[in-house]
Image 1 (cartoon, helix red, strand yellow):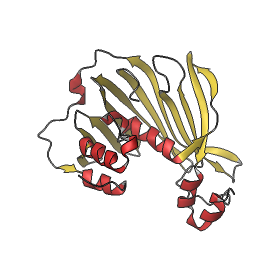
Image 2 (image 1 turned 30 degrees about the horizontal axis):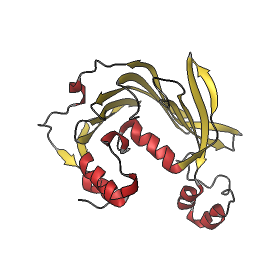
Image 3 (image 1 turned 90 degrees about the horizontal axis):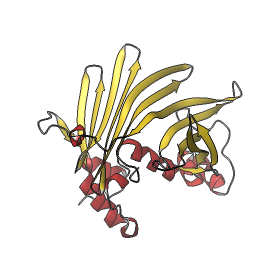
Image 4 (image 1 turned 135 degrees about the vertical axis):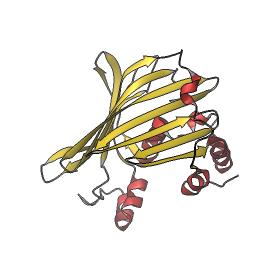
Length: 251
């Protein structure tokens, strides 16, 4: 994501739970600001009579996370400078130069998660709605699958497939990714789909689909879109929890 210029896109999301599907919508803004990148991701999902919303916003120092579920509202932040420093101390040969390449929050976090957890087949070229793209499917890396299924860990690491249907029901067994092929948005993620094979109906079932569409370059984006008021009440700092979760040493 750090390679891309300032842009905006609409977001469409579909979540499948058993035979029920919930549809959400939102927007993604990205601003090239000097050598760094700031983003704002907004998602809204209607669950029955209740509206759930999520915001990820980065400024010049923090990732802010705002969650609203019905009457319950919360806002927290993660100090990107501390994460950058901790990552550099943990791996000096692979230190992130910019906050945007940390993979903390937003689409960057999603793509980093895919790269860390899945291995992808060779991409196939395609053209969708006039846009040249790469399409590829991915499956769990053996080392990640062994962690998810410790009782089968040895056989999985030895090259065997896990027992069919043994993954927890809330987890996918495949991810499909569609990314841009040409300038000015090479490798931009237009579509991500998590799915799972359902042996009862002998077909693959979508669990989550996220699509970005009506993507437009926006060199005129106002930096104020990426600001969070300093007077936010009940702001919780989650930096220490993030560092512990990812095995990083707090500085």
